[in-house]
Image 1 (tube, rainbow, N blue to C red):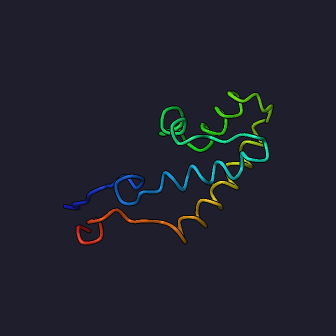
Image 2 (tube, rainbow, N blue to C red; image 1 turned 60 degrees about the vertical axis):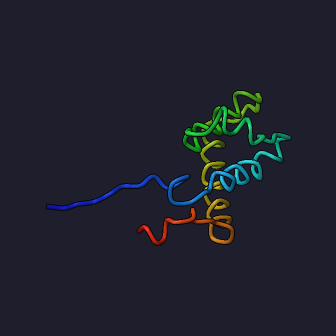
Length: 98
């Protein structure tokens, strides 16, 4: 019998939501858009990156098509990985538990 435990990553293993928000904001800045922490947690947390960008594009009337949104998602993933590699934080107690 195979025994396994599956963990959600964000907020369980690592505290990375702030890094996701920073990556979103890096890409939205050229459009004059900044998502506040409060708005991110209220309106966008739990959405996929594609859904988040799509919603921001609609909310702010940015007029970007699906291809442009997919490009933002790809770029956001690269930026997030850079942030996570240099600034990522494992939640206290996780390493000994695992």
